[in-house]
Image (cartoon, rainbow, N blue to C red; front, top):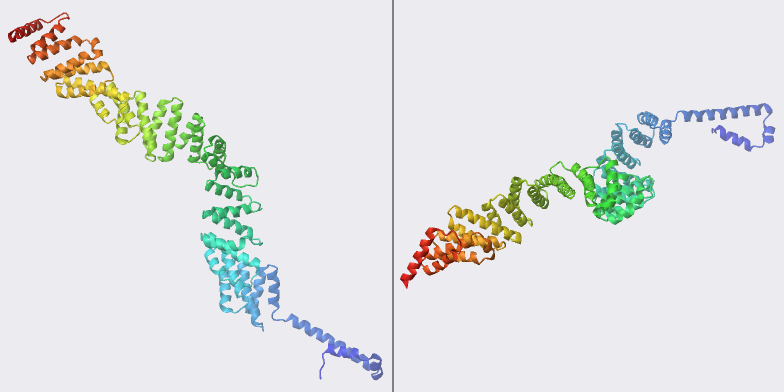
Amino acid sequence: MVYPAGTLLKLFRKLNYQRIHTIFPPRIMARIFCIILMLLSLQAFSQQTAIYVDPERDYQRGLDLLQKQKYGAAQKLFFSVIDSKENISEEARANSAFYVGKCASELFNKDAEYLLLDFMKKYPASSNYQPAVLELGLYYYRLKRYKSAIEWLAKVDQADMEQDKKDEVNFKTGYAYYMTSDYDKAGKAFYLVKDGNSKYATAAQYYYAHMAFVSENYETALKEFLKLKDSEAFGPVAPYYITQIYYRQKKYDEVLKYAPSVLDTAATRNAMEISRMVAEAYYRKEDYKSALPYLIDYSKNSGGAGRTDDYEIAFSSYRTGDYAQAITYFQKVTGPDDSLSQNAFYHMADCQLKMNKKRSARSAFQSASKSDFNQSIKEESAFNYAKLSYELSFQSEALDAFRNFIKNFPSSLYFDQANEMLIGIYTNTRNYKDALTALETVKNKTQNIKAAYQKVAYYRGVELFMDNNSAEAISLFGTSLQYPVDQNLVAEANFWSGEANYKLNKYEEAVRSYNNFILTPAALKNERYNLANYNIGYSYFKQEEYSNALNAFRKYVKENHIPIRFVSTMQLCESQILTSC
């Protein structure tokens, strides 16, 4: 029976030394000790040799290097384990296959995908199968291949996973969904992380809030951003979102209550944008005086101000009475043919009117009237352009402008006023025919319109009479008499109506018109007053009413310069009267 050296030494120690000494002489004892020492040395040497030639030594060293994150060196050792011809356990080979893939992933090597997939294919029952799935998902995530990351992270079994690792998987899944614009799924993933204690919790809360904001779920977003206001990482950006949420909800009082205080904090980001929303809140509340400093500051310092910002500065200046500044900024807005330019031209024109710059205002109104974006502005601008053209004596332009206005805006509140001015132009240019046409379209006949109607109808009647169109002349004289504003014109219309009827041999109607003329108070001072008696006499004479004719003639003879032919006519009347007796 052979005993190991260590066992022999133990047995030897158990024996009483004196007893052994009595059994064996000193020379034998010395040999025994030498043998034992030699056996012990051989055993130690054998153990060292066993360690030195251990076939899994590279595997152990690889694990040590992997733990120290020396992935390149570790991977070489794991490859040597896989390729080794020695008697290595299947577990060590399988694990090494996983670790070469993990090292490749950590090193961003292009073969990481292949190595990990190859491992999962060869060792589906390995305890490292799920870690390989996770590693592949994280590898895709780091490469920003988010769709692939989503696919593999979804395969990770989180059942026995530590909470911190679960949070990592859920956060990165959420972020991958976020980057592929699938906000619904991203929100669900972030929701699992945001209220935890992991290092991913705050970031998850931010993205969850941001997506709620993008989805216009403002109350949820506001709740989350308010939690982030003290966060070191996201606290500086939270005020921007909070302010914007209040602004989008049209809670302008909340904007003005919250935002100005955070603008004083140095850490706050997007300060200029927050300032812009403060300006907008004041602007929407029509507090233009308070809005102006913020608007001007944003315009000068943001680098991102545009035409809308210039317009709001202009309009705020306009509403606060600073017309010169308003004009300056309105001019910056004009240019493109759009609603903003149309509004700018319209309000700029009003500023110029208030500064008594009628020519400039006329030009601005003309520009505003050419745009179709806002029909109310187009209508009012077209009217004001025509009106200013009239007032500034651009008669030809005013005439065309009013004609176009009446044609284009027949239902306008300014329709009658435009017609009235158009009639004034026609009257001043003695275009009574067109003036009469314009008058006939006026719905609300004011006193001025009635006066114009009387005048235009009368003068148009005279024109027709002179053109030997007595019938139409009589009709227009009658129209003129319907609006007896000016008594002198009443007298004239009656007289010329008598003349026209006489010309048409309508002597009875002529007598009636002449008598109406004589009975008009204003006729007493009319140079044709006595001539009416003369004409009445001849009208009766033509009807062979000699007695009435003689009476009319006798009234007329009171005047001097009686024509010789008239005397003979009176004599004829007298003879006719005597004969009839």
